[in-house]
Picture 1: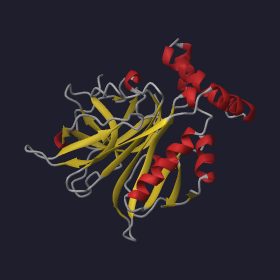
Picture 2: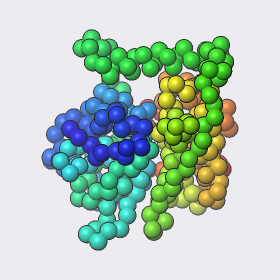
Picture 3: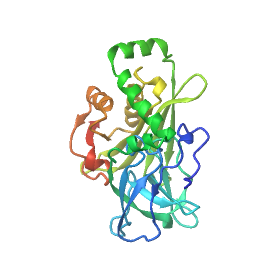
Picture 4: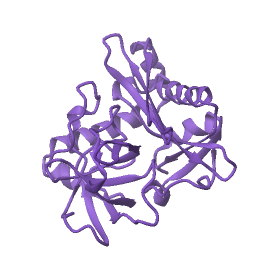
Amino acid sequence: MVSPPPSTADPAAATGCDGPDGAVDARRGTRQAVVRGTSMRPGMERGDVLTVVAPDAVEPVRPGEVVTFLDECGNAVTHRLLGRDPAAGGPVMITQGDGRTEPDAPWPADRLVGRVTAAERAQGRLFRRMLALERLAWWEAGERLATRLRSWRPVRRLQRRLVPSRLTLREERRAADSGEWLAITCTACDARGRAAGWQTTLRQGPDTDARPLWLFFGLQVRLRYRGIGLSRRLLAAAEAGVAREGGGRMYAFVRPDNRPSLGLFRSSGWRAAAPPAGTVRVPELATCLCFVKDV
């Protein structure tokens, strides 16, 4: 299948589509699908099993939720909803993959298939794909091994000496005219303008204490630039962007097996807590830890 084409500046442009396998013609009830792309990383990996529930008229999808929709070719695509924008022919939906820095092309609301309410990591699927000599599977295995090696302190010191740390941070803002949502994407670029790392922060409605809620997601750093503190710089840039908008409560979800990210949030003043009241239903709630920080 083919997902909406990403921007040529998108660092994940070469990773392919991230939609689920399976029939999605019938838009009633609950169905399961399998992710076969990578642009929803790190929250969703290739082979994850998703539970897609048909949209509810009583409780419509809200910014921050992961939704499945049909693209122009009728193929299913699963991305995170940023918000709605008014249009002449009716409201259009704005979505973006967690592993991308650019949003998808706007699509009409009648293409919505449903919201994703659960995401289960497939066990042993990577090994089976490696046995099938799939090139992407071998790349994923090598990336995991390199990440473990670079977590060692001597390797991190060597990494800081060999890899130049002169990276510039670029901030892009996208907002609805109604002010319903605001997305801030921060990208770290090298001297040639290539993306070394990126993340997105999405402003949602206020919680029970009337404070703005900000969902932090999509933090990724290219393999070459890991170990030089770039993730910490991106997290600090996100907090600074939220502070410039008046502050609020930031929250993020981290998988329990993602030890580098767990250490990053804990050492940056974030605390593990229950998801803030008023947050939308996202698949990370079932398997991930929630971290919260007031800015």
